[in-house]
Image (tube, rainbow, N blue to C red):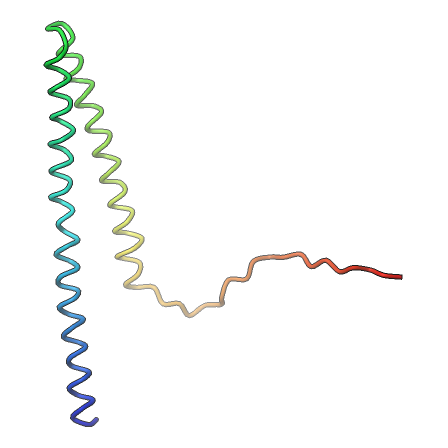
Length: 112
C-alpha cells in the first residue's frame, strides 16, 4: 500500500464515520418532532374542550385523549417498522442470491 492510498482510504473512512455521526444525530431529532406533534394535538383537544359546554367537556377531553393516543401509537408503529426494515436489516443484508425474474408468458404468432 502506498502512502497516497493510505491517506485517501483513511480520509474516506473518517468522512464515512463523521457522516454516520451526523445522520444518526439527525435521526434522533425526530423525537423532538414527536414532542411538538403531541403538544399540537393536545392543544387542539384542549381548545375544543374549552369551546364546549361544561357537560360536554369531560367527554371531549376523554375522546380527544383517546384520539391522540391512537395517532401517536400509529406514529410509533411506523417508526418501529422503519427502524426494523430499513436501518437494522440494511446493515446485515448481503445480496448474494439470484436476481428476481418474474414469471411471464410468451406469445408467439402461428402462421400457416
